[in-house]
Image 1 (cartoon, one colour):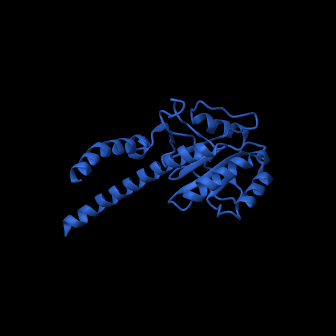
Image 2: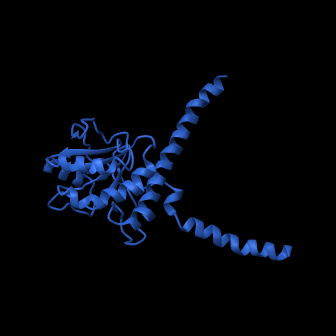
Image 3: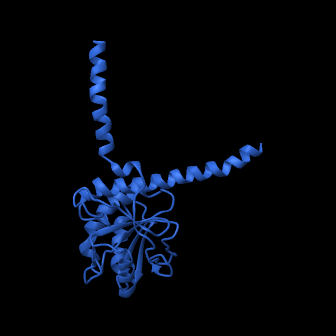
Length: 221
C-alpha cells in the first residue's frame, strides 16, 4: 500500500503543480504596464464637488457616454462584481468620465446604486468632449470611443497613472487593454484576477518598504 501511495504522489503531484501554475500566469508576477503616463483628470468637477485625481490611486476608469440610461447594465455589472468586492482597499476608486450635461443622468444611476452599496468611492466626473477624447487617446489602446463618448471597455489605472492589463490575452492572443463590462464572464475570469494581482503587487511593495524602514532602527538597537 505504501508503495502505491508513493507512486501515486510521484505521478500525480507534478501534474497538479503544472496545472496550478498554468491556470493563472498573472497570479505569479506583476500585472504588465501597457501604457505609461495616462493623462490625469485633476481640476475636473464631480457630483459631490470633491477633488478627483488619478495619482496615488488604483482607479477603475469607465466611459459610459452621454446616454447613461442605456448603459446601466455596465454600471450594475461593475458594481456587483468589482466595486463591492474591492471597495475598501487602500486608495481604490472608480471613476466614470462623463460628458458635461449628463449630471442628472449620473445622479439617477448613483441613487440606484447607493442602496446596494456605499458608492462614496465611485466618482462621476464631468468633462468636455475634447478632454474625454484626450484622456481616452492617452490610453493608447486598440479600442475607440463611440460618437456619444462611450466604450464598453473598462480600464485599470495604477497609482503612477499607468494603464495595466495583459500583454497576451488567452482568447485573442493580443494585448488586453480593457475589460468588457457587458460580459460577466470577462469580469469574473479576467478583470477580478488582474485587480487581485495589482493589489497584491502593492501590498508586497508596502511590506518590503516597511521592512527596509524598520531595519536601521533594529540595527541601531
